[in-house]
Image (tube, rainbow, N blue to C red; front, side, top):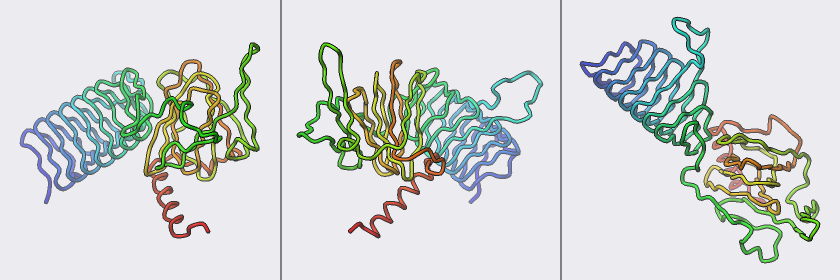
Length: 320
Protein backbone atom coordinates (compact mmCIF):
# COMPACT_ATOMS: atom_id res chain seq x y z
CA UNK A 1 0.00 0.00 0.00
CA UNK A 2 2.79 2.41 0.89
CA UNK A 3 2.59 6.03 1.97
CA UNK A 4 2.26 9.42 0.25
CA UNK A 5 4.73 12.33 0.42
CA UNK A 6 3.75 15.61 -1.24
CA UNK A 7 6.25 16.92 -3.80
CA UNK A 8 6.84 20.02 -1.65
CA UNK A 9 7.45 18.02 1.53
CA UNK A 10 10.82 16.71 2.74
CA UNK A 11 10.78 13.21 4.22
CA UNK A 12 14.23 11.89 5.13
CA UNK A 13 12.90 8.95 7.17
CA UNK A 14 12.40 5.49 5.70
CA UNK A 15 10.22 4.39 8.62
CA UNK A 16 6.83 5.65 7.49
CA UNK A 17 3.77 3.40 7.83
CA UNK A 18 1.29 2.34 5.19
CA UNK A 19 -1.55 4.74 4.43
CA UNK A 20 0.22 7.75 5.95
CA UNK A 21 0.06 11.09 4.10
CA UNK A 22 2.75 13.78 4.48
CA UNK A 23 1.62 17.08 2.99
CA UNK A 24 3.31 20.19 1.59
CA UNK A 25 6.15 21.91 3.46
CA UNK A 26 6.32 19.24 6.16
CA UNK A 27 9.84 18.12 7.10
CA UNK A 28 10.50 14.71 8.64
CA UNK A 29 14.07 14.07 9.82
CA UNK A 30 15.81 10.70 9.24
CA UNK A 31 15.40 9.29 12.77
CA UNK A 32 11.66 9.92 13.05
CA UNK A 33 9.16 7.04 13.08
CA UNK A 34 5.56 7.44 11.85
CA UNK A 35 2.98 4.67 12.03
CA UNK A 36 0.16 3.62 9.73
CA UNK A 37 -2.75 5.76 8.50
CA UNK A 38 -1.43 9.06 9.87
CA UNK A 39 -2.10 12.50 8.42
CA UNK A 40 0.86 14.91 8.64
CA UNK A 41 -0.46 18.30 7.53
CA UNK A 42 1.28 21.32 5.96
CA UNK A 43 4.26 22.87 7.71
CA UNK A 44 4.81 20.15 10.34
CA UNK A 45 8.39 19.62 11.57
CA UNK A 46 9.27 16.22 13.07
CA UNK A 47 12.75 15.78 14.52
CA UNK A 48 14.92 12.69 15.01
CA UNK A 49 13.85 10.31 17.79
CA UNK A 50 10.24 11.46 17.56
CA UNK A 51 7.76 8.56 17.39
CA UNK A 52 4.19 8.78 16.09
CA UNK A 53 1.85 5.82 16.46
CA UNK A 54 -0.97 4.66 14.20
CA UNK A 55 -4.03 6.68 13.13
CA UNK A 56 -2.67 10.03 14.35
CA UNK A 57 -3.48 13.46 12.94
CA UNK A 58 -0.86 16.21 13.19
CA UNK A 59 -2.35 19.47 11.98
CA UNK A 60 -0.59 22.44 10.38
CA UNK A 61 2.36 24.20 11.98
CA UNK A 62 3.19 21.63 14.68
CA UNK A 63 6.73 21.00 15.92
CA UNK A 64 7.58 17.62 17.43
CA UNK A 65 11.02 17.64 19.02
CA UNK A 66 13.32 14.74 19.78
CA UNK A 67 12.06 12.46 22.53
CA UNK A 68 8.35 13.06 21.89
CA UNK A 69 6.37 9.82 21.68
CA UNK A 70 2.76 9.83 20.47
CA UNK A 71 0.81 6.61 20.88
CA UNK A 72 -2.14 5.66 18.64
CA UNK A 73 -5.15 7.85 17.71
CA UNK A 74 -3.65 11.12 18.93
CA UNK A 75 -4.94 14.42 17.48
CA UNK A 76 -2.58 17.40 17.64
CA UNK A 77 -4.19 20.73 16.74
CA UNK A 78 -2.67 23.55 14.67
CA UNK A 79 0.51 25.25 15.90
CA UNK A 80 1.00 23.02 18.94
CA UNK A 81 4.60 23.08 20.18
CA UNK A 82 6.36 20.25 22.00
CA UNK A 83 9.54 21.25 23.82
CA UNK A 84 12.31 18.95 25.00
CA UNK A 85 14.82 21.17 26.85
CA UNK A 86 13.85 22.97 30.06
CA UNK A 87 16.99 25.14 30.07
CA UNK A 88 17.96 25.84 26.44
CA UNK A 89 21.19 27.68 25.66
CA UNK A 90 22.43 28.72 22.23
CA UNK A 91 24.78 26.16 20.69
CA UNK A 92 24.94 24.12 23.90
CA UNK A 93 23.45 20.65 23.51
CA UNK A 94 22.18 18.98 26.70
CA UNK A 95 23.61 15.54 27.49
CA UNK A 96 20.09 14.09 27.47
CA UNK A 97 16.76 15.41 26.24
CA UNK A 98 13.60 14.97 28.28
CA UNK A 99 11.09 12.40 27.07
CA UNK A 100 7.43 13.33 26.60
CA UNK A 101 4.76 10.62 26.26
CA UNK A 102 1.32 11.25 24.77
CA UNK A 103 -0.90 8.22 25.45
CA UNK A 104 -3.55 6.79 23.15
CA UNK A 105 -6.62 8.82 22.28
CA UNK A 106 -5.32 12.21 23.47
CA UNK A 107 -6.56 15.40 21.76
CA UNK A 108 -4.49 18.58 22.00
CA UNK A 109 -6.06 21.93 21.08
CA UNK A 110 -4.57 24.60 18.84
CA UNK A 111 -1.59 26.64 20.07
CA UNK A 112 -1.03 24.54 23.19
CA UNK A 113 2.55 24.25 24.48
CA UNK A 114 3.69 20.96 26.00
CA UNK A 115 6.72 21.23 28.29
CA UNK A 116 9.24 18.37 28.35
CA UNK A 117 9.33 15.32 30.59
CA UNK A 118 5.60 14.91 31.15
CA UNK A 119 2.94 12.33 30.29
CA UNK A 120 -0.54 13.03 28.95
CA UNK A 121 -2.78 10.17 30.06
CA UNK A 122 -5.10 8.18 27.83
CA UNK A 123 -8.00 10.09 26.24
CA UNK A 124 -7.26 13.38 28.01
CA UNK A 125 -8.27 16.65 26.33
CA UNK A 126 -5.94 19.66 26.26
CA UNK A 127 -7.66 23.01 25.67
CA UNK A 128 -6.56 25.48 23.02
CA UNK A 129 -3.67 27.68 24.14
CA UNK A 130 -2.97 25.67 27.30
CA UNK A 131 0.51 25.62 28.82
CA UNK A 132 0.93 22.02 29.97
CA UNK A 133 3.68 22.00 32.61
CA UNK A 134 2.61 18.89 34.58
CA UNK A 135 1.55 15.37 33.68
CA UNK A 136 -2.19 14.98 33.07
CA UNK A 137 -4.33 12.05 34.31
CA UNK A 138 -6.26 9.84 31.89
CA UNK A 139 -9.58 11.29 30.67
CA UNK A 140 -8.91 14.71 32.26
CA UNK A 141 -9.92 17.96 30.55
CA UNK A 142 -7.33 20.69 31.19
CA UNK A 143 -7.21 24.36 30.17
CA UNK A 144 -5.31 27.52 30.98
CA UNK A 145 -1.81 28.86 31.62
CA UNK A 146 -0.58 27.05 33.60
CA UNK A 147 -3.03 24.25 32.90
CA UNK A 148 -5.56 22.99 35.45
CA UNK A 149 -8.12 20.20 35.47
CA UNK A 150 -11.64 21.52 34.94
CA UNK A 151 -13.42 18.17 34.68
CA UNK A 152 -13.12 14.62 33.35
CA UNK A 153 -14.50 13.68 29.96
CA UNK A 154 -17.95 12.05 29.91
CA UNK A 155 -18.18 12.24 33.70
CA UNK A 156 -20.89 13.80 35.83
CA UNK A 157 -19.80 15.63 39.00
CA UNK A 158 -21.97 14.63 41.97
CA UNK A 159 -22.50 17.47 44.46
CA UNK A 160 -24.65 18.26 47.51
CA UNK A 161 -24.24 14.71 48.75
CA UNK A 162 -25.40 15.36 52.31
CA UNK A 163 -28.92 16.21 51.13
CA UNK A 164 -29.52 12.78 49.62
CA UNK A 165 -32.14 10.43 51.02
CA UNK A 166 -30.19 8.27 53.47
CA UNK A 167 -33.33 6.55 54.90
CA UNK A 168 -31.63 6.13 58.25
CA UNK A 169 -28.75 4.10 56.78
CA UNK A 170 -25.08 4.81 57.57
CA UNK A 171 -24.12 4.58 53.88
CA UNK A 172 -25.55 4.91 50.38
CA UNK A 173 -24.38 3.68 46.98
CA UNK A 174 -23.73 6.68 44.74
CA UNK A 175 -24.49 4.97 41.41
CA UNK A 176 -25.82 1.62 40.33
CA UNK A 177 -23.01 1.27 37.79
CA UNK A 178 -20.20 1.51 40.36
CA UNK A 179 -19.53 -0.03 43.76
CA UNK A 180 -18.82 3.37 45.35
CA UNK A 181 -20.39 4.11 48.73
CA UNK A 182 -20.70 7.28 50.80
CA UNK A 183 -20.71 7.09 54.59
CA UNK A 184 -22.23 9.68 56.93
CA UNK A 185 -20.91 10.37 60.43
CA UNK A 186 -22.82 11.67 63.44
CA UNK A 187 -22.25 15.37 64.15
CA UNK A 188 -23.24 17.40 67.23
CA UNK A 189 -23.13 21.20 67.50
CA UNK A 190 -23.59 23.47 70.52
CA UNK A 191 -22.12 26.74 71.74
CA UNK A 192 -18.77 25.03 72.29
CA UNK A 193 -18.44 24.06 68.64
CA UNK A 194 -19.05 20.93 66.57
CA UNK A 195 -18.15 17.33 67.37
CA UNK A 196 -18.07 14.74 64.56
CA UNK A 197 -17.89 11.08 65.56
CA UNK A 198 -16.48 8.19 63.52
CA UNK A 199 -17.19 4.84 65.15
CA UNK A 200 -14.77 2.33 63.64
CA UNK A 201 -16.83 -0.74 64.49
CA UNK A 202 -20.26 0.39 63.32
CA UNK A 203 -19.56 3.21 60.84
CA UNK A 204 -16.56 2.31 58.71
CA UNK A 205 -16.55 -0.28 55.89
CA UNK A 206 -13.18 -1.68 57.05
CA UNK A 207 -10.78 -1.56 59.97
CA UNK A 208 -8.16 1.15 59.26
CA UNK A 209 -4.51 0.08 59.32
CA UNK A 210 -3.06 3.38 58.11
CA UNK A 211 -3.97 7.09 58.00
CA UNK A 212 -2.53 10.11 56.22
CA UNK A 213 -3.60 13.66 55.36
CA UNK A 214 -3.20 15.77 52.24
CA UNK A 215 -3.14 19.57 52.44
CA UNK A 216 -1.54 22.67 50.91
CA UNK A 217 -2.00 21.31 47.38
CA UNK A 218 -1.03 24.10 44.93
CA UNK A 219 -3.79 25.46 42.73
CA UNK A 220 -4.34 23.39 39.62
CA UNK A 221 -2.43 20.33 40.81
CA UNK A 222 -3.82 16.92 41.76
CA UNK A 223 -3.09 13.86 43.87
CA UNK A 224 -3.61 10.13 43.47
CA UNK A 225 -3.78 9.07 39.82
CA UNK A 226 -3.46 5.38 40.63
CA UNK A 227 -5.44 2.34 41.77
CA UNK A 228 -4.92 -0.34 44.42
CA UNK A 229 -5.12 -4.09 43.92
CA UNK A 230 -6.28 -5.00 47.44
CA UNK A 231 -6.33 -1.88 49.63
CA UNK A 232 -9.58 -0.08 50.51
CA UNK A 233 -9.57 3.66 51.20
CA UNK A 234 -11.97 6.08 52.89
CA UNK A 235 -11.60 9.78 52.04
CA UNK A 236 -12.84 12.48 54.42
CA UNK A 237 -12.41 16.17 53.63
CA UNK A 238 -11.83 17.58 57.11
CA UNK A 239 -11.73 21.17 55.91
CA UNK A 240 -12.45 23.00 52.67
CA UNK A 241 -13.32 20.94 49.62
CA UNK A 242 -11.91 18.81 46.84
CA UNK A 243 -13.22 16.69 44.00
CA UNK A 244 -12.52 12.98 43.56
CA UNK A 245 -12.58 11.28 40.17
CA UNK A 246 -13.29 7.53 40.21
CA UNK A 247 -12.98 4.96 37.42
CA UNK A 248 -13.57 1.19 37.69
CA UNK A 249 -12.59 0.45 34.10
CA UNK A 250 -16.19 0.49 32.84
CA UNK A 251 -17.83 3.55 34.40
CA UNK A 252 -16.60 6.88 35.74
CA UNK A 253 -17.87 9.45 38.24
CA UNK A 254 -16.58 12.55 40.02
CA UNK A 255 -17.63 13.49 43.56
CA UNK A 256 -17.36 16.80 45.40
CA UNK A 257 -16.31 16.32 49.03
CA UNK A 258 -17.05 19.43 51.10
CA UNK A 259 -18.11 18.15 54.54
CA UNK A 260 -16.22 16.38 57.33
CA UNK A 261 -19.38 14.38 58.10
CA UNK A 262 -19.05 12.40 54.84
CA UNK A 263 -16.60 9.63 53.95
CA UNK A 264 -16.09 8.33 50.41
CA UNK A 265 -15.26 4.61 50.25
CA UNK A 266 -12.97 3.69 47.35
CA UNK A 267 -12.75 -0.10 46.93
CA UNK A 268 -9.80 -1.91 45.34
CA UNK A 269 -9.44 -1.89 41.56
CA UNK A 270 -10.72 1.68 41.32
CA UNK A 271 -8.64 4.40 39.68
CA UNK A 272 -8.76 7.60 41.74
CA UNK A 273 -7.66 11.20 41.22
CA UNK A 274 -8.15 14.01 43.74
CA UNK A 275 -8.32 17.48 42.23
CA UNK A 276 -9.93 20.95 42.58
CA UNK A 277 -8.50 21.38 46.08
CA UNK A 278 -9.63 24.57 47.79
CA UNK A 279 -6.79 26.62 49.28
CA UNK A 280 -7.74 25.48 52.82
CA UNK A 281 -8.51 21.85 51.96
CA UNK A 282 -7.40 19.11 54.36
CA UNK A 283 -8.12 15.60 53.07
CA UNK A 284 -7.81 12.66 55.44
CA UNK A 285 -7.35 9.16 54.01
CA UNK A 286 -7.94 5.93 55.97
CA UNK A 287 -6.47 2.77 54.42
CA UNK A 288 -7.21 -0.88 55.11
CA UNK A 289 -3.56 -1.96 54.79
CA UNK A 290 -0.05 -0.62 55.46
CA UNK A 291 1.85 1.05 52.64
CA UNK A 292 2.95 -1.47 50.00
CA UNK A 293 4.37 -0.39 46.64
CA UNK A 294 3.35 -3.74 45.12
CA UNK A 295 -0.32 -2.91 45.74
CA UNK A 296 -0.25 0.19 43.53
CA UNK A 297 -1.22 0.30 39.85
CA UNK A 298 0.17 3.54 38.39
CA UNK A 299 -0.19 2.75 34.68
CA UNK A 300 -3.73 3.32 33.40
CA UNK A 301 -3.46 0.74 30.61
CA UNK A 302 -2.27 -1.84 33.15
CA UNK A 303 -5.16 -0.89 35.41
CA UNK A 304 -7.73 -1.40 32.66
CA UNK A 305 -6.32 -4.84 31.90
CA UNK A 306 -6.20 -5.77 35.60
CA UNK A 307 -9.79 -4.61 36.18
CA UNK A 308 -11.04 -6.53 33.14
CA UNK A 309 -9.26 -9.67 34.28
CA UNK A 310 -10.78 -9.31 37.77
CA UNK A 311 -14.29 -8.95 36.29
CA UNK A 312 -13.86 -12.00 34.10
CA UNK A 313 -12.54 -14.02 37.03
CA UNK A 314 -15.48 -12.92 39.17
CA UNK A 315 -17.96 -13.95 36.46
CA UNK A 316 -16.26 -17.31 36.02
CA UNK A 317 -16.14 -18.03 39.77
CA UNK A 318 -19.13 -16.25 41.37
CA UNK A 319 -19.24 -16.27 45.17
CA UNK A 320 -21.54 -18.80 46.71
